[in-house]
Image (cartoon, helix red, strand yellow):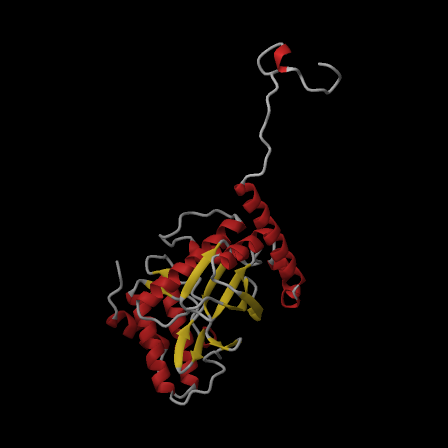
Length: 287
């Protein structure tokens, strides 16, 4: 070498590996696109973290979640975010502007560090669509989100009114927003029922169709049935299991008891066991 830390003259290389060669470090189009996307993502991340409607939920927005949201924006599923419309232990749901088909969408963001992930695991393990997940929180939550997306598709195909599933990315689910102008439709518990008998008949038929499609909701009650534009819509199907799940019978019994209890208070004479018997007798579930 001419001096310490200088470049070696390639003609005087002592051994293979000592050669010096020119390396092309000029910008390529791919480099420019990558830098632009990095800048855009950084700007997106700062906008979200500085936005008033997200400040109360900073724990939800780690960089991986922000990257998932950014991908959904880039794919055109989300155009602009509104505020939170519901928040629970596992997830927060935000209103947002969607694409040309769905003017408003609901963006459900699951927390990776959900406090009761063990409860999630109960519904996943034993479902033949999912292999053993162990105790890894991230794998459990990500599987749960994919499961909710799959359950929404299955329920919709069975003729059950649920929010249309639109897209899923990591721990973020985008679906049809049930409501208007950023206000979510009321639950069955909050709505004023003019005809409880008709409402009961619809819920009973939805439960039968779910069972016919090989699904049991697992947490059905008046609090996760919405009344939207004169229709009943079942939500929160993330925990729904197939009829092959070892606890599906117990879950169906509980669902029937919850539904019967609500409609009893509306003046309808129905017991949970009668509702369950009707569902089983009138459904031909997938095997």
